[in-house]
Image 1 (cartoon, protein in one colour):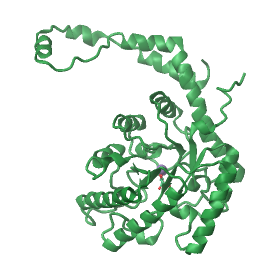
Image 2 (cartoon, protein in one colour):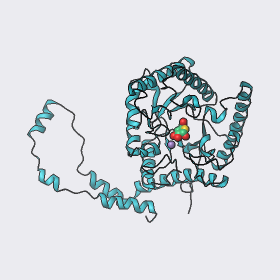
Image 3 (cartoon, rainbow, N blue to C red):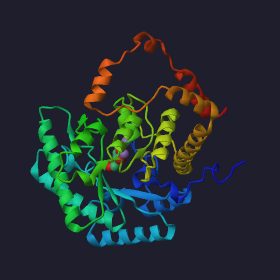
Image 4 (tube, rainbow, N blue to C red):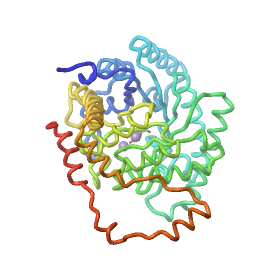
Amino acid sequence: MPDTQTDFTPTPADKFTFGLWTVGNIGRDPFGEPVRAPRSPVELVHLLAEVGAWGVNFHDNDLVPIDATSAERDRIVRDFKQALSETGVVVPMATTNLFTDPAFRDGAFTSNDAQVRAYALQKTMRAIDLGVELGAKTYVFWGGREGVETDVAKSPLDGLKRMRDALNFLSGYVRDQGYNLRFALEPKPNEPRGDIYLATVGSALAFIQTLDHPEMVGVNPEVAHETMAGLNFLHAVAQAWDAGKLFHIDLNDQVIGRYDQDFRFGAQNPKVAFFLVQFLESVGYDGSRHFDAHAYRTADADDVKAFARGCMRTYLILKEKARRFAEDGEIQGLLSQIRAQDAATEPYSREAAQALGARDFDRQALGARGQPYEALDQLVIELLLGVR
Ligand code: GLT
Ligand code: MN
Ligand code: MN
């Protein structure tokens, strides 16, 4: 039965990555202490290699503690590089922790304190240097603390201006250093701030066009974040792709209306995950498939591996389902039926406008036409449930 296409074993070509903070999550939450022992970056690289991941991503302080001396930094980086070369695990993406330290309690790039903003820029320049040294080509900006609990604290226009100033400064830095690095903004509506600036993928896409170097900056949409906002994740990803801005993606799962859950990919909404995988594979997205998720707090060390394997396996199963969808005669027959009345929209010309103005439409006949979307959707459900 299983052949090379259907044994669901991850390969480097799948570009599956995890952050150190994902498989390294120790299960702390606002109500409870850690439940899992911390593991070193070296141990986590070996764990990722064991489960078959291609790459590892990190925040500066996932690797090097914020208070490390430069000698400690050098030793940590040397050991980490050795683990990478022993395992073949690569570093496609890096980012900065601008949210844990109390200095960032009122934001980093958008703090009301210019010294905090300057410190955040310095910390990010150093973290960019570290990421590039380890091979990162994408640099993520998740502004968890960039926001407010009350709008009396800060004008949202100041928030936007300060974000723009910071990104312009850092684009200048990357260009000046000659780094081959692109930025990916990761929107989120709330948590940990009451309201985070640039709350959705759409907001980020519009904001990017106001930057000094928009060509360097794209987005890193996360399933859970758009879902928290009650939005359709596939539509957000499609818009990013359409704009040439899908530089990275954070895959996980989330129930609408709940706290930020970061569940295993496909754990909650397999149908949503299916259309997402089908989209990424069909358009030819060739970036990392980054699982920004963590195991349930109930998980022990073995269950963390089950979590990581589950993310990748579900992706590959859904990719196989997408292949079957494309080959399913009944599904494709209904799709052709739906598209039978389709034709390209004629571009504007005076003649085209005149012809359209003179055309007769049978409005009642148009309104009387139905579409077999119930039948088609049921076939998708049956495909996903494994009976076709
Ligand atoms: C944090 C957040 C994620 C971001 C990470 C990058 S950190 O865990 O919840 O969505 O991608 O900063
Ligand atoms: Mn998240
Ligand atoms: Mn994320």
